[in-house]
Amino acid sequence: MKTQQPMETVTVECYSGGRFAERPVEMTWRGERLHIASVERAWQTPGGMGFVVCAADSRHFELAYIIAGDRWTARQLTLDA
Image (cartoon, rainbow, N blue to C red):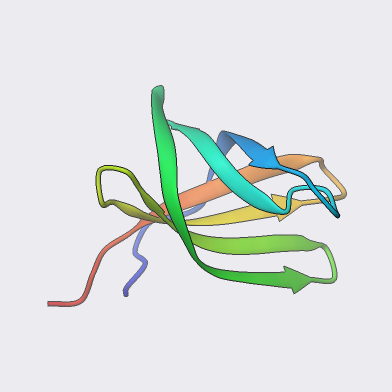
């Protein structure tokens, strides 16, 4: 996967079971509400969490949660040919 776009501020709804923002389930991307069908990768950083997700319409996104600012950012990923 290649990323060409800068990160943009988004709204994300998450499942929070054992910890906060355990798994993103919905996001609003450029005014469009998207259901997240799967989380393909997840990782933790010193400042937050990151995810690669696949929306129900098969678009892929990188999501990042920044704890200090209590905000989410995202960028759409493009698949390599």
